Structure formats: structure tokens, C-alpha cells
Length: 524
Ligand code: TYM
Image 1 (spheres, rainbow, N blue to C red):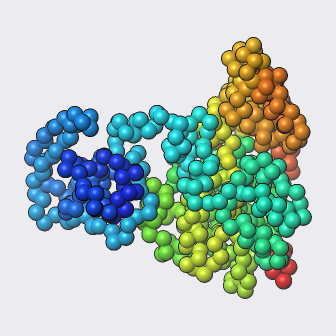
Image 2: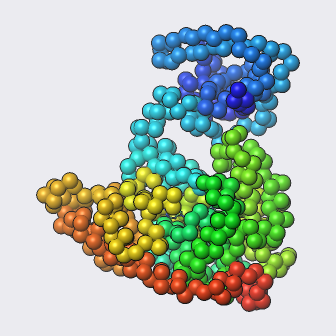
Image 3: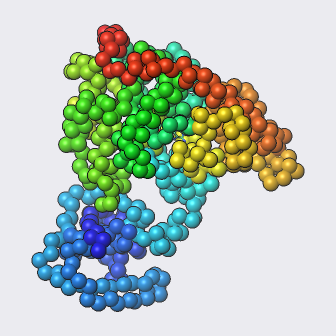
């Protein structure tokens, strides 16, 4: 009844053994001389290595004849065999010609209730269990996401002190404290950004926001704060995409018009992060799609469903808008989307740098692949860690659970209440124990937030040393955080109130001679 497709892929024996072990084998096993396996899988049901022909989907089978059950003591599993009628002339599943590079995880393949999946989920300590996608961040271990492993998994690079130093030299500015403290920690092709700055080659910034609600939370501010700083030290234009379309397609049943309205509200908060209106273009996809569309189409033509499914984990139940959307987020990384800034055919290759949190990486892995095939430079990326949820480092601060978040609209009292009530403490259970053993800073949410928002390096160091050695108690750290966040938010609210409709109109207009002149000046 589910009409599930049967998928078949060829994969290196070692990789399959590592990923699936015995789960893919029947009793007879497979001789060790076989070095490549043909794996057949039915999402959320089963996976098996087999050379036999398989029906293309469960829906093509006519009827079930017989069910038999066999308990396999050794594997501790119940094997269910279903005999089916009407298998003659059914369409068969095709074997892809090429081996796939990204194997589906056990969670994709087996039912939630399967012991292997449950064990993996509850073991928790292994960072292979971290789920980081543009829609969900959930760490396996209590210390939060293992960012080192994520860098390897996503195939990006760590931001090294040598590279930060080169960036400082190229811009003539000391690195922002987000960079100095390793909160921005990973990148792709930042060397090329340094080189562009060193040689005066054209460069622009691109970032964005999915306007799911009227208010941003402080986690969202991080990429915008660094983008505004980078705009200043690199002296470049920035384009900011508001994905009202994405939120409608992926979101929680608000009308499209509501996401569009939120985009305009969010644009005010974004401008309050300190962007230079003369060098900033903000657009909502609904408004600007006409300009993006030729590029969206070029990208859609070059990206296959199997690629997008592999990167984003889409399954057959996804609406087709989801499958099409990645090309829309990819497009602004190509300068041809902004003829009002770069002209319709930029003479010089223009480099794009995309600073954001690492959850957006899947989009830009795809973008980089397509960009080079379209004759553009691959965009560079600069990635930050997540501000955790108030309740602990296992999930990121999220707009869909406002009790997990400090919103930019919160007043001083609300901020204080949330910090005091919810911020997960890495301190000990009693004041005596805390004085004796000190706090675990890695787990302590208030301390983690201070690393983002307390600019004074010296004070932060003092808090770290006193709190971890037991001289400071959780309540004192929380008080300090409430003050720091209170100041950050009230300043944000003050700056937001200065973003008038005129300013918005200006930054949301793509055809400004001043933007164009700015770019020309840079590329001379
Ligand atoms: P969105 O609205 O989910 O997030 C906006 C930006 O905030 C980052 N972010 C966080 N950073 C630190 N701590 C957190 N807890 C946290 N939560 C979110 C996100 O990485 C993002 O940079 N699809 C995108 C919108 C988009 C975009 C882009 C983002 C369109 N084009 C280009 C970055 C770059 C989205 O829904 O972001």
C-alpha cells in the first residue's frame, strides 16, 4: 500500500561492511573474494546484499500470498518472509551504473524500532549520531555537536591560526572575537578570499535567513554580526536572501503571505546588525525570483534528483517544492543573479564568500559542484558553531521553540527569567560541591553564551577560571549573562527602531547606481 520504491546501489565491500555489518546479509553470507556489493533497500524496512532481480516498487506486486516467520537466535531477529503473487512482467528496479558515495544511514534504512537504530540513538556518545541538516540539529552526546567530526564528514576545513593571521594581514584588522575564539571554526576556500583581498580582485558576501517568524533569536544574529563586520573590513557589497518560499514549502502551514510579511520584519532586524545601506541588497525570493529564475533553471538542469536526495535526505514523501528549492538558495552564490551590481556578464570572475552556521553546508556543497560546471568560481564558505538551546548543548537554539531561545524582541525581565529558569548549568548540584569541584564549562549554557556575547576577553577568561575552579557559582554567571544579553538586545532594539521604511526601500532596491559604482571601483 505504501508503494515504496526499491533502490539498488553498488558499493565497495569494505564501506558496506562498516556501515551495515551483518544486517545486510542473509544466512549464507557472502564470500570474502567479493569486493563490490549490490545493495537493495526499501526505505525504513530492510537492506540486503543480493545479485537477484527486484521489483521496482512494492506497489507493482499484485497480492500477498503467504506470510512466514522465523526466529533467528544468533542474530536475535525475527525474519518475515512474504510470498507474493503476480511477479511476472513487473517492472524491475534498476541498478545505477555508478557506485554511490554517500551511503544511507541505518536510520534511513531500518525501522525506528530496530535494535541497531535504537542502540545507536541511545548510546549517544558517538558523534556519528549527530544530526546536522538545515532543518534539524541534534547532537548525540551531551557535550553537543562534535564539530571536528562534522568538518571531516562535510569535507570542509578547519580555520587555522595561520589562515586567520593571513586574513588579518590582508584586511589590516584584528580578527573579530567570534573568529578569535573559534566560534567561526570551519571554511572552504578562505585562502582564495584572502588572495582576492590581497590582489584587489572583486569579491562579494552572500548570506540569508528563512523568515519563519517575525522575530529572530540571538543565534540568528551571529552570522549577521560577522557579515556586517566582514562587509566593513573587506569593503565589499553583500546580498541577503530571505527565503519566504523555503519556509512556505518546508514550514508549518502559515499562509505564504505571512512568510512574505515576516521577511520584511526580519529585514529590519538584519539591518540593525550594522550593514552599510549603500553596499547592501536584501531581497525576498517572492519579490526577486524573476531575476533569479534563469540561474535557478541552469542549476536545476545540472543537479540530479539522486544528488539532491543524497545531500538532503529527501524521500518519496517530500513535496516537489522541497526538491526544487536547493537551486534557489544556490543561485545568489553566482554573480549573474545580480546584474544591477555586477552587470550581466562580469568581465572579471567575481568571488563569493558565504558566512553562516554550518547547518547550511548541504546547500553549498551542491552549489560549489554546479558553479564550477557553469563556469563560475566556486563560492567560499565560512562556518560558525551553533548557539545551543537554553536547555542544553544537544540541540541548537531554535525559533520553533521559543522557550529554548532568547528572542530579539524579549524585554529585560523576560531575558532574565529565561536565563535563570532554563539555562542548563554545568555547575554542581550543591554550592559545596561546586566550590569543591568547579563547573563543567563545556556543558554550561550560560558560559557558552558568554563566549559569543561578552566581548571583553579578560573578563571572559576570569569567569572561565573562577567558575571552573569553583570560586564562582552558577547563579553569579547567570546574573552576568542576563546583564550582557540584556544590553545586547536593548542596543539591537534601539538600532532596529532606526531602520525606517525609507532605509528598507533603499536596501531592497536592486537597481541602485551606487551599488554598481561600488563594484566597478572594486574591480578596477
Ligand atoms: P535560518 O533562518 O534558519 O537561519 C539564519 C542564519 O542563522 C544561522 N543559525 C544559527 N547560527 C548560530 N546559532 C544558531 N542557533 C543558529 N540557528 C540558525 C543559520 O545558519 C543562518 O546562517 N535557508 C536559510 C536561509 C538562507 C541562507 C542563505 C542562510 C538563504 N540563503 C545563505 C545562509 C546563507 C535559513 O532558513 O536560515
